[in-house]
Image: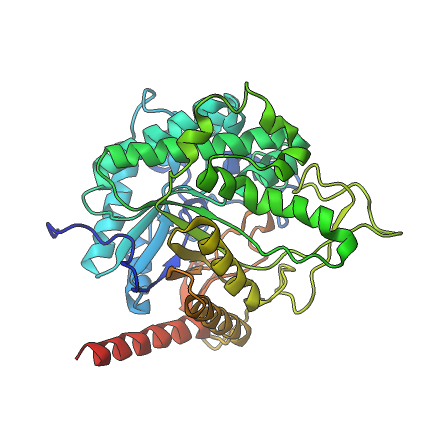
Length: 464
C-alpha cells in the first residue's frame, strides 16, 4: 500500500466521479462471520412491511462476490467507490464493550485494498440505516447513547482502515432514518411516533458530531455528512406555510445546526419537541455546529407541497409530522417509483446548499428507478441514460453558477434490495438476476463508462 496520504476530498477546482452501494442492499450473508440482526432484518419479517415480501438475506450476495463487483467498479473507470459499513458486522453487540468482530473488519479490509489495487479511492459511510437490532431494543435513535455507540464504531473502523481511507461520511440520509423510520413507520424500525421522531433527528445529528470528532481525533481529515436535501417548490401562494414546514423538516433541521448551531424559529413552531432541554441539552448544538468539512447531497426529485383542497386528505403527510393539511403533488414525468424527474432541481439544491453552508458539496447519490428488460444478454435502459446525462449536465450548471461542487456519485452500481420496495424497483446500472445473481452491464453502465473515458481524455489533453 502507498505511504502517501489517502485520496480525500477533491481539491478546490477539481472534480471526481464515483458510484455507490449500501451494505444491507447488496451484501447479503446476514448470518455470516458473526454478523447479528439489524433493524432491517427484523423489519422485513413484518407482514406487509416490504412491497414484495422480500428481504436482504441474500440481496446481491456481494459479500461472496466481492472480486466480481470490484471488477465492475474498476471497469467503470470511476475515481471513488462509495459504500457503507454494516454496523452489526463489526460490532455485533452494537457497542465496542460487547466485542469487535474481526471477520467483519476483514471483509472491509479486502474491499478497501481491492479498490486501491484497482486505482479507485474508497469512500465509506459509517451508517446507512442498518442499526443493530440490539441497539433498537435499547431505544434506537430515540436514545442519546446510540450516538455514542456510533462514535465507537467510527473509532474501531478508523483503527483498521484509516491508513487507506481519506474521506469519510458519517450518516446517510438521516431524514429517512428519523422520519420514515420513527414518524411514518414505512422504514425500519417501523415506529409511528409522528412528531416524536424529532428526538431521533436530534440524536442522529449528535451521533454525526460525535463520530466526526472521533474520526478527527484518530487522525482523519475530510469528514462529511450525506443529506437527501430537496428543493421545495410551493404550488401556490396559499401553500407557502406548508411549504415552509416541509423545508424545515427536509432541509433546515439538518443545515441549521450544522451551519449555525441552532434550530430556527420556523422549525421550532412545528417541532416544539426540539425546545425541550432534556432532549436538546447544553452543548449539543455547539458540538454539531461546524462538524462537517463537506456536505453530501443525494438528489432524486423536488418536493411540490400544496395546501389540501376539498377532496384531499387533510391529516398531512406522515413523513412530515406536524405539517398540517399538507399534500404533495409531483408533476410528470415520473420514474417507476413515482418520483418527479426534474434536473433543474439538482442545480438549485447544489447552489442553495453551497451558498447556505459555505462548504464544498458532493453529489453522493443520483439515479432513477425504471423497469428494465434483459433480452439477448442486453439491457437497453435508455430512460436511465437520459436521466443520468441530464443530471450530470445539471451539476455542471451548478458549478458554472459558482457552487463549489467537487464530485458526482451515481446511484447505484447494482440492482439491489430497495428498502420498503423490495426488489420491485431497479436503480442499478448493472442488472442482477434474482435467481443466479449473475451480473449484466446495462446500456447506462456503458454510457457512464464512456462519459468518464471522454472526461479523462479531455483532462489529459489539457494537461499535456
